[in-house]
Length: 448
Length: 170
Image 1 (cartoon, each protein chain N blue to C red):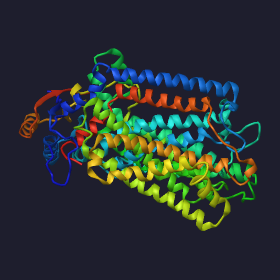
Image 2 (image 1 turned 180 degrees about the vertical axis):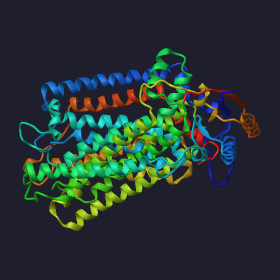
Image 3 (image 1 turned 30 degrees about the horizontal axis):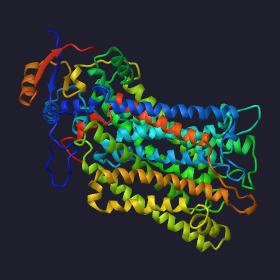
Image 4 (image 1 turned 90 degrees about the vertical axis):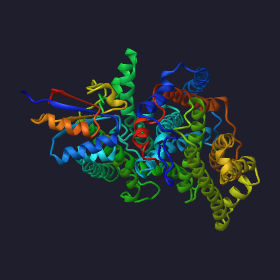
């Protein structure tokens, strides 16, 4: 075990390579725990509700949603932005690991990437379904057509399509390639024919050759380097969907960096939630140590400061501009008016609650960590709600102001995406090692 | 007597690295090493620098040029539409799609290049030297040579747990 005074150990115990393999494949090889079955049941019920909502949206149309003439984007886009934000953490960890050579991220990388893949899948459903006729979704692709039209390459809405598709492909590629050596380990350990066949198929004949490993490591570093600007650009483009408009509260240059930091912030909070649950469920505190949790909590503390600053800048610029509509949106609608409850919940959850992580005791208390990670994601949902609904519901002309409330169909689609996420993560936990076995073995002697 | 390939098993990557240093000094031809993970030390001694990054740069340049050409053709030549009085040819908005197309095409083509060069692909049957090569053991495979006893001696001194000879397919 590493005993350096400046490097903390990757694995908090002396473990041989074989012991590490046995510890990390145990979740898949042991009997299915009851909580897994309960979780899958719950996820399936959520999927069923979402399926009904999806069916209603397609068969009856978007009139089943709570959208109005003014509030043309409601829960659909709130939840799209929320899921995309959550999806950023996985790629951020991959970048920390591959580009910045932060070895401690090796224990968290795989699960964070899985979270990204499922979150981006959930996010991608919303733009698809909010078209109303998703079977015509191919219209947004640039192909020669009988309408003699091309898509508008100047529009952030098109940039979004390309960005999200690229991001989904990149995330799946990084996630899959990262696990190929571990799939080979599972293939060689598997006693069942189906296991051997499936792991064998996806492990691509991997035999541990260093010549292949050399190209593989080069490829993953290239992909990591490509993913770094991609992850910044994806949420910047999502922010530009709003920032290029003229609506008060949307038309601000702070939006792109504000959205990007918010995405990393909410993603890390979700990673923290999942890591705490996994540490408890699989007893892997030796691999996801207190230092890992500490690092994530510190990133959340920093993110919270930046988000708080972004809120302050938004309010300051609205005041400094002297524009009546901006002043109304921030000082009336959001801070003291119809949306004040949601606004102050957002401020508390995002800018105030995570400040508790300044205290080491709080960073070491599992209950506080778990509670704050959930609070942050609730706060980030309210942030998207405030940005979208307050600016749309009360824009320039008071005669077109409307109240907005979601319908059961709106709620159902959101719950359905939770079902996709929960079922996806549970299947991942069961069939794929949640921690990168080969990476942990490679760094166990060196430490972080 | 037909020379065979020597296969040596190591449990510890540090001992393997030491053995590789000696073998390279003695100009013994190393075919490959099989193991559960790679370290920088072992990769440096067994392999040479991959040219994949150069290929990726070329793919990226191709993607940028292709994306620019396509957007220029559709927006300026084929069907120019004035959106809110904005110029027909405006480079800054093109940058976003060019950048994303660059990343997308570079990713796809780099992955295909990797598959092509390494000859691995989904569904390929495994050709393990030993099953524990993917778990906790390293297997050093040397090229066929005419002084196996001397080499085996070096390997034993450097901590090899097992040494065997086999004829491997080229």
